[in-house]
Image: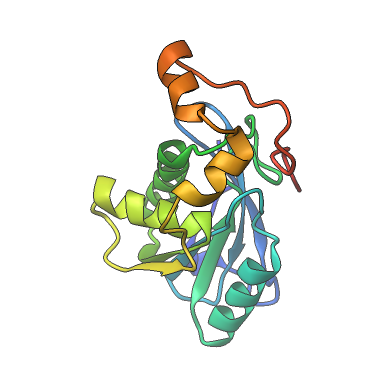
Amino acid sequence: MAQPLSPSSQDASNPQQRVVITNKHGEELVGLLHPVGSNNIVVLCHGFTASKNSSVIADLADALTKQGTSIFCFDFSGNGESGGEFQYGNYRKEADDLHSVVSYLHQKKYDVKAIVGHSKGGDVVVLYASMYHDVNMVVNLSGRFYLEKGIEERLGKGFIDRINKEGYIEERFCTGLQKRA
């Protein structure tokens, strides 16, 4: 299910470790653990169509580990190296992915001090905090707050009426919604 981790067994000469965690849908979530010798850890969440390797996440991980904070960053399902299909607007599923990560880290005796999300990941961490109550600090970096703008451009005029009538919407021409590494 996942590679074994233990805060007390981290090798300081190994700056990061690849970890695979299975979410509740049976999909593999691929993450990177950046240990610094402490069981205190912060989880970093990427934005829309991004990955754990995006420059914002990498820069945050670098800055926080230099300050003595262990970091875990991962790809939401359907993004980067993680399994599953990319889905548009799947905030609840991504919150569930984050719950799988936090639960795994708790099982491995890490103390998750904060969840930090950038862009869409910022919205996911706020939703997570409203659903689960196991992390005391939530940081939303540039999360979207006015979601009406941009959706019509992607899905077309009258998309809500089509969803209400058909029960779904088929997206054929949306660029940038493919799975990215």
